[in-house]
Length: 266
Ligand SMILES: Nc1ncnc2c1ncn2[C@@H]1O[C@H](COP(=O)(O)OP(=O)(O)OP(=O)(O)O)[C@@H](O)[C@H]1O
Ligand SMILES: [Mg+2]
Image (cartoon, protein in one colour):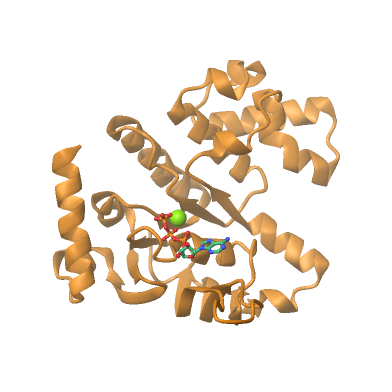
């Protein structure tokens, strides 16, 4: 991990108001307000904040799934709005995502090998044999047994499903992975195994991570830089250790205390 790589992805003065076109007294919901983020190659950026603080909104903007109301997202210095069709396709391949519950987005009738290579297959028109070889390569990367290629997603445990989601995300050889609560529904020991896998993949593939989580200990453990969000704004940011060991903003202090209580209750 390093914090000195090239800038890959940026949010520049980004605001997001859902339903901004609505007129009348209810003018739409401001989910993000003037947010600036710089993500460097090979680093892990942590995003924390209470529910509704704008973490997922920011991740969807960084992924190009949604557009900011004002400001811009830049990929390797180029605003997404300025990319032509093939440039935007390259961007979408370069920035992948894993969400909390990928099961809901996996077609239950498709087998694992099909699920993993689905997107890749559409883009590259692979033969069945090439698709199988690609599936094996990806299964191995995420620590799943190649023999499971013919299984269905419901036959997998929660942790195995997240490995499957990771394999799907890796199919297009991304440079950046956005992990939005990707580990949140896993129990502690499985979570630790997937974290180790993520760290290994980062080392071997030079990946950059945007890691959104409620587990502050985990964020402190794996992130180089952390931003703390509150009601759509970044209220504090810095090296992960500094933010959690010596928080300056009262909101970060409260978040840390709440997380500590949460751990006791678990
Ligand atoms: N599609 C949408 N339409 C309207 N409002 C939305 C939409 N998505 C999110 N919001 C609102 O934007 C704000 C930020 O939501 P967001 O999902 O980004 O928060 P979050 O930090 O990811 O929360 P959580 O920790 O619960 O996942 C919230 O007030 C939410 O209600
Ligand atoms: Mg969210």
